[in-house]
Image 1 (cartoon, rainbow, N blue to C red):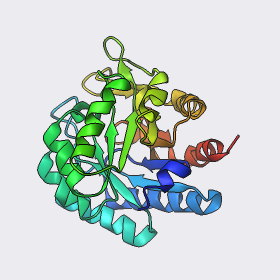
Image 2 (image 1 turned 90 degrees about the vertical axis):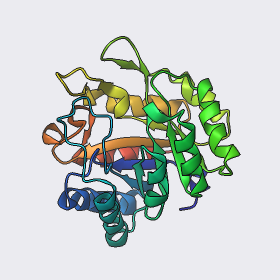
Image 3 (image 1 turned 135 degrees about the vertical axis):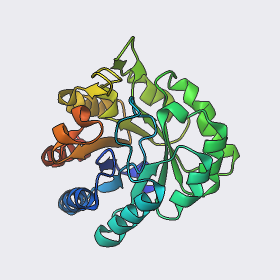
Image 4 (image 1 turned 90 degrees about the horizontal axis):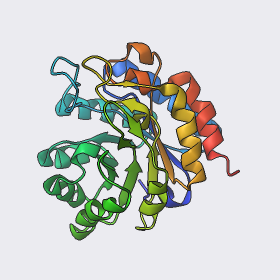
Length: 260
C-alpha cells in the first residue's frame, strides 16, 4: 500500500468490529468494493481477530490470530482491498504483517514500547490510536518510538478522551495538534461515541452522533476516517451500539470525500 496516498487523498478504514464469520466479512467487503468503485475513494478493510480488552470475560473475543489472518487474506484475495487489524502483543506484529497492510495499535496500548517497536520493525504502516487518557500533544512520544525504530510510516488516530465514568468527549483540537508532527491523522468516528463499560458488563454507544463526529473532523483537517460498520449492528457480537449500519456508509463517505 502506498503510504503517500494517505497524505494526499482522504482514506477510510471501515469494517465490522470483530471477525464473527467469513460470510460477514465477505458481505461487508463486497459493499466496500462497490463504494470504492463508485466514489473513487481509498478504503481499507478492518476487522479484529481478538478483542482483548472486552469489558466482561464472557464476551466474544474473535477467532484468534491464525484463523483471523486466514480470513483477512481471503478478503484481500477475493476483493482486492488493503486490510488492517489491531495487535495486542509484540509477537503478533510479525505474524499479522504477513497479511495486513496497516498494523493498528489499540488506544489502551499506545505507550507500550515493545509493541510499538515490534510493529515498526515489520516495515508496515503503523496506525497508533490515541489513548483516552492522553492529549494530542502527548502522541508525539508514541510516534517517536516508531520513528526511532526505523519506520516513518505512521498514522495517528483520534478517538476521544475519558470524561468521567462511562463517557467520552472529543477535543477536536487534538487533530490539529497531531497533524503538527507531520503524520496523517485519522478520526475514529465510531469508537469516539462509545459509552465505555456503560451497558451492564459491556460497552454502549450512540451511533447517531457518528456523522457529526466525522463532519467535525473534516472541518479540523483530518486526513482519514475510521468507522466500524455492520449489516445488523444491534445484533453484532462487539460494539454494536456505536457501529454504523452498513447501508449508511456510502452516503457518509460520499460527503466526507467531497472536497467542499
